[in-house]
Amino acid sequence: KNEVEQSPQNLTAQEGEFITINCSYSVGISALHWLQQHPGGGIVSLFMLSSGKKKHGRLIATINIQEKHSSLHITASHPRDSAVYICAAVIITQGGSEKLVFGKGTKLTVNP
Amino acid sequence: NAGVTQTPKFRVLKTGQSMTLLCAQDMNHEYMYWYRQDPGMGLRLIHYSVGEGTTAKGEVPDGYNVSRLKKQNFLLGLESAAPSQTSVYFCASSYTSGRNEQYFGPGTRLTVT
Image (cartoon, each protein chain N blue to C red):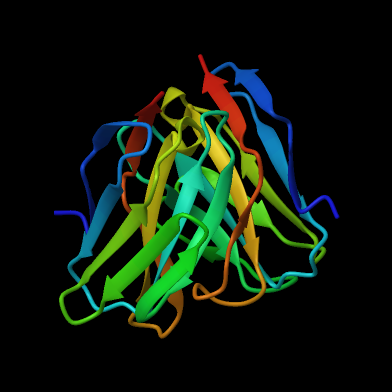
């Protein structure tokens, strides 16, 4: 079992719909990142959060450390939101360093 | 600022050939990373560096070597390419540790025939 699991793997929505992408992890973490990978391949960071909720425009990320779960929400979705969304957990290794463990990504397609 | 750049963008190698991928960042970041991305799998860490002159192994280091002679550059070398190394390679950098935002390069698509 992967340390970081995302669901769904693929998601198709109509423009204007509310989108939720889920990320769960099986080990203790210190923080979690949400990334967006554009169809052209470029990867950008959306959020880093260690507790609670963050909002940027139509994007909202939440995390519940105790339940080992995070969600990414997109309100009023638009075709330009079509991308792969990746969560990455910050795990502290036995040596005390931090490493990112990535989920496999959720491919979102928003149709006009 | 250019951010994180990678060269080349595409490359086709024959089995057994060698090559070096170059990553450069102009943000004065301490940490730099090399990842590979394969279909159906998440990004996997190959090697990373926590500062000039330092390197460390990641999750999938076999078949790769790295060097960080200058703070702004992180080189990934394949000494004898194998078809299993066909992948998209991403370089990233961050100010410090994993809790800091990572900035990614545009990627290098490598095919080994």
